[in-house]
Structure formats: C-alpha cells, structure tokens
Length: 155
Image 1 (tube, rainbow, N blue to C red):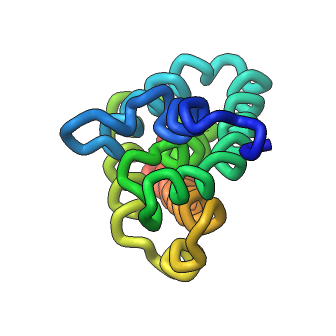
Image 2 (tube, one colour):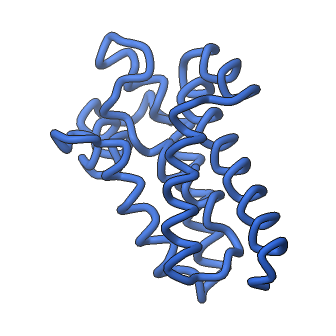
C-alpha cells in the first residue's frame, strides 16, 4: 500500500500527523498524545483495539518508506511506532494518576533502553525494525504494570 501513497501522506502518517516534527523530544511528545488517546478510549475496548490495529498496520506500511524518504535508518521524526507501543502499554490497566504516570515513564524507559529482544528487532531495519521494538517495549511495560498492580493490591 505504501507504494500508492504519496511522500506527503507517508510523512503525515509515519509522524503521526506531524507530531514527529515537534522540536523537542518528538517521541515523548507523541507518546503523551497517544496516552491521552488511549485514556480517552479506555471505556470503548472495541475502538481501543481497532485504533491499535489500524495504527500498527499503517505503521508497518509506511515506516520503511519513510526511511527511504529521509535517507536514514529509523528517522527520529517517525513516531507512529510510539503510538502502537503506548496502546499495548496501557491496555487493560486501571486508570489512576499513579498508574498512568508510572506506565508512561516505564514505557519510555523500555522504549529507550531496548531490552532483548527489542534491540535485535530494531537492528533489522525497515518497518519491522522501527515498529517491532516499540511493540515489545509496550508489551514489557504492560506485563510489568499488571504484575506490580496485582502485587500492590490495586486490583
């Protein structure tokens, strides 16, 4: 599908509607936007899942092409991968201020530190390299948060 999209559309989608061009910490900024969307969809699980599936599918379709456009591996302006990862990170968590803040910062840590196999997936390059490490970071975040919440007796 990315072959049928213009460069303008690839940039629009891969940067999550140009959030990736934010001058300071575009990954963090887009993660905040994504977290707010996820929180807004929390009472609508079908829409939440649909948002995740569509975002992830689009990410896999456009991220490799964006590398070609930018002529660099995993360009910093590509942030649709953060959106997909945040969706996984926040899935089915109770929404309290402590959970939201902890989940967000834990997500950013897992996204930055690339714990195995995220580091191996990122090294693949292309759409797989861009998307998969963030999906793994989201999964790690969600698992750790569910364990912590149960251990703390929150749910």
